[in-house]
Length: 445
Ligand code: 2IT
Image (cartoon, rainbow, N blue to C red; front, side, top):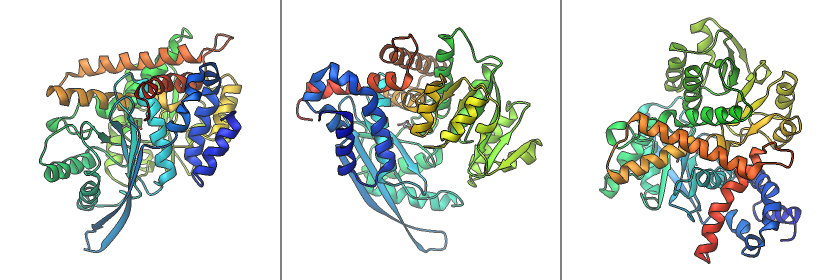
């Protein structure tokens, strides 16, 4: 392949109608190409061509019976993207939007993210177009049991270790684990995000949010600044947003927004204490709305709007891919926002990222900023292998160390000639090198 353009054309031809996957690949190719040309061994061995091709993709039928006894049918997927540096590792997304393109983009990003953590984890992703919204516990269990009945053929503690993602929380992981154990008659660390009673790790539920705030802290630190007193806006209200909210309040920043598919909440007094706990209740209600927060705490709710129109020092997109677009980026720049810490996977559109960078906004890509979740999943795997449980302090200290390590890697590979750090470039090259070197060493893989 002679240049970026011809490479991307090849990817597009071979993977038609996969816009999210193309978007994720394009960003990586554009930012690592100079590095590849400077290190022709990777080009010669077609490492990048190989990295965009999943090692394996499973697509399967998931039939289940609803509470009325009626047949329901969903699609199930598992993408085993890359196992060069460890077993495939990545979450299971349960959301009606799930399709092959979205899961391939997530699996591709996961390869780089997991590499950045420094832990021995390859990349994978899975999921289903199952919509948990409005389903009973019994229906969720029926779905999970059927999903795992097929998935168990392809996973294992040394092969592929799934976890949570959007729509898959502690309840779903419990049902999935129970079914795996029944079918295989083995108690192993085949899933992460497990309950504490059966092999889960302390801090795992908070880890993505905590990690992303730790990453932001490092970004501010090199600018001789801190989170204290900063006004913060986040999107989402789920597990990740909850972790971000907890850590921000501990560090003295002021969180003023959360959001859902129905709109956003603006709480100028700051989202702290019992208001943070309420996020868990909202999530558990299974309705995917934030509006009830406004009623309960007497704040403003802006229906069908995104929180990025609020004046904020730092924005943390925490919901889903492409939730922050060019228009939102322009509003943030106009309002004087200085940092965007992408906590959702590919939360910003490509033109939004370019606009932010052009306007000297410090931007952390999701694969670096949100790696804390999978990092603690990696620590859960370690604890399962050791048959030990570490304390909160041990896990939290390791998580902080990992996020600092990722930040250092981004600075190492992303430093521009003018001394500024391009975190997108830093994360992509930093994530690439370890996987690429492992693939070179392993020959025809
Ligand atoms: O996007 C992600 O990194 C996750 N959903 C967590 C994956 C994991 O294996 O913990």
